[in-house]
Image (cartoon, rainbow, N blue to C red):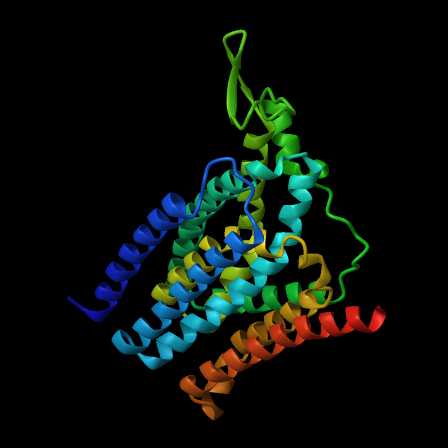
Length: 312
């Protein structure tokens, strides 16, 4: 059995055990999650992800481990930016806070399935036609540029969401939650509650975010193991991170700019990879990418805090 296969098996076992522990011991049905509980759960997933980094360092290689932690940090920072949109969706559709956990859980599990399919297709495309990476590179540079200059006043409006309009057009929908149910029967026919609608919107919204994040991860590593594991660890930790940061995420005003710089950097690295490799080794470039991600994300969050303190 190869080291790659061992890492995959350990990863699957750890995720299954962690989900069982997280869902069985750290969660109670229809209960509002406190800051303390959210912190414990977030710490749990972060420690697990870092533990897997150490395991990859020992079992796989130092380069693969650094690529994994770089990709994980990239996904984690994008998750923080996504939380703001999730809050808007919950608020716009009047979801009660006690149902947040259940809705996020189902939405995230669906997102993981879709992301696995999306990553599989992306990796297959790159293996068959490497020039696809140049398209990803241009896309990341464009996305980073538009994110950097985006107008903060432009508000995301969930009720104008195309998915919501599609569901509303083809399915009988009620704006009530019916005590936490997703589907109820009325006059013998199924009626889809607002919780069902929100789960679908969250899943599709995460797929839209994946259009940025997965090419960005592929700009860090081509190894499917790194891409799968970093994505899944980051997405599974999103639910607890949501409860931990939902009251403070809108204070990270300059986080999108930090993420934008990273996306542009990775996009340019993908476009000029053959030229860069002549001057910088792959191992060195991996550490440079990690440093760039840490500096930009941490710097944007610190500057956001400084800006708020200065304004006060």
